Length: 66
Image (cartoon, rainbow, N blue to C red; front, side, top):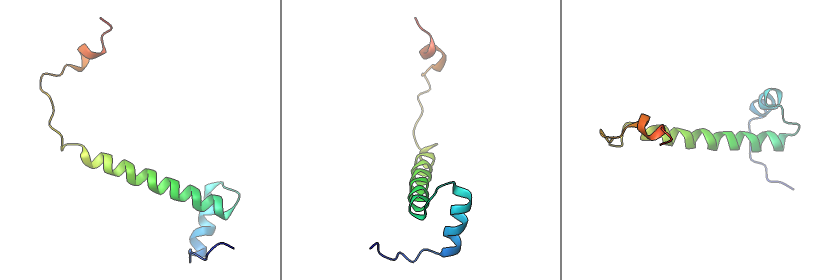
């Protein structure tokens, strides 16, 4: 028997309705995956502007096949 996580039943029903998963377990697992992905992306976005750029870097030259 799985432990009771105390998940809000209204939230779970809404997630089931819009998420496209067949079961509550699949819905919760998908929600957790998306939560982790969004938080990970947010951390990467927080890094923008915090790193020094190289003024001599030429992105066009790097794209050439020479």
